[in-house]
Amino acid sequence: MATNPAEILGLPKPAWAADEVGMLYDMAHRFMSEEIAPRYDEFEKNEMVDRECWLKAGAAGLLCASMPEEYSGSGGTFAHESAIIEAIGHVGVDGFGIGLHNSIVAPYILHYGSEEQKKKWLPKLATGELIGAIAMTEPGAGSDLQGVKTRAEKDGNHYKVNGSKTFITNGQLANFIIVVTKTDPEKGAKGTSLIVVETDEVEGFERGRNLDKIGLKANDTSELFFNDMRVPTSNLLGHEEGQGFVQLMQQLPQERLQIGTGAIAMVERALALTIDYVKERKAFGKAIIDFQNTQFKLAELKTEATIGRVFYNDCVARHINGGLDPVTASMAKYWLSDLQGKVVDECLQLHGGYGYMNEYPIARMFRDARVQRIYGGTNEIMKLLIGRSL
Image 1 (cartoon, rainbow, N blue to C red):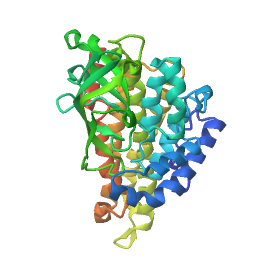
Image 2 (cartoon, helix red, strand yellow; image 1 turned 180 degrees about the vertical axis):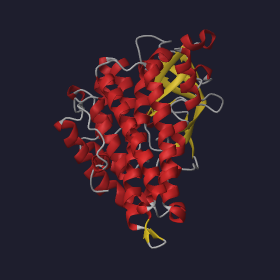
Image 3 (cartoon, rainbow, N blue to C red; image 1 turned 30 degrees about the vertical axis):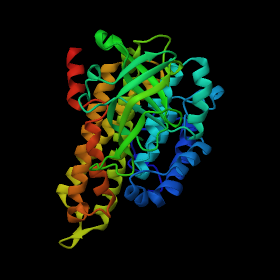
C-alpha cells in the first residue's frame, strides 16, 4: 500500500509519533516498498532475506535506530523502532528480521555490555556487518527459560559451550548470537548467563537446517549446535556470571511490546486491504460492502483495531517513559496477537475463495500471523504471568 493504513482508517495517531518519528516511518516505508517488497517472493522461496538487504538497511539508517549516536546508532527511542516495525508490517514484508536485531539483540549490548563491548559490537550491528540473533529456545525448553540445558564451562580464558538451540530467528544469516547458557546448573535461574558468540571467529559452532515453517517463510529460522565451542570469557554480558536470567526478565517487556507492534501493523494492513477489496468485489449484482453483514463485520473489526491502536500507543508512551511493567507488556503481547489472528481470519473470510489463494496478500498474512501467539512466550504463559499479579 502506498500510504499508512492507520491513517487511511482514521486511527488515532500517538503523541510519540512526532515529526521525526513520522519522517523515519516514511523513509522506512519507502525502503521496504522499493528494496524489499519487489524481491519478497524471491526471499520467500529462498527462505531468507539476503545479506545485501541488511547492509542497505544499515546504510539507510534503519538498523539500531534507538542506539546512542556515540555507538553509530541514531540516538532514538523505541518510538523510532516502532516506526520501522510498523512500516515492515504495513508494506507486508514481515519476514525481514531487523526488528529482533534492532530492539531485542542490540539493547542487551547497550544495557549489559562493557564499554569495550559496546564500542566493538554496536557500530557493526548498526551497519549490518553483524546480523544479530538471540538463542533462547531449546528442543526441551521453550517459554520456560529456567529449563535451558546449554552449558558453558570455564576453560582458562575461554568458555567451553555445549548444547543446542532451535527456532532461532535470523539463524542462518546471524554472525552475532547472544546465547542463553547455564554457567552453574546447580543454581537454577541464578546460574544462567548470557554469552555473545561471533560465529565467524569460533570453532565448534554449527548451524542446522533452515526450518520449514508454516509462515514467515522469508525469515530464516534455524537450529544451532555447540560442540565444545570455545568463546572468550570477555564475551560474557554483565560484570559477573549468573546475571542472565535477570537480564532476560528486564528485556522481555520490550520484546513482547515489539510483538504487539507487528500485530497492530498487520491488523491495520489487513483491514485497509479488505475494505478496498469488498468495495470492488461484487456478488448478486452489488458490491460486497453493500451487504449488511459485511458492514457489521467491518464495523466490529475497525472498532477493535481502534481499541488495539489506542492500547498500543499507550504502552509505547509508557515504555518510552520507563513505566511499562512486565504485566502490561504481557497483556499487550497476548491481546494484540490474539486480535491479529482474529482480524486476519475475518478479513480472509470476506475475500471468499480468493482469500485462500497465495497470490492475495491476505493469504500470506493468515500464515504469518499464527506464530505471534507462540514466540516471545506463548499467550498462555502471558495469561499466567498476568494472573500472578491479581
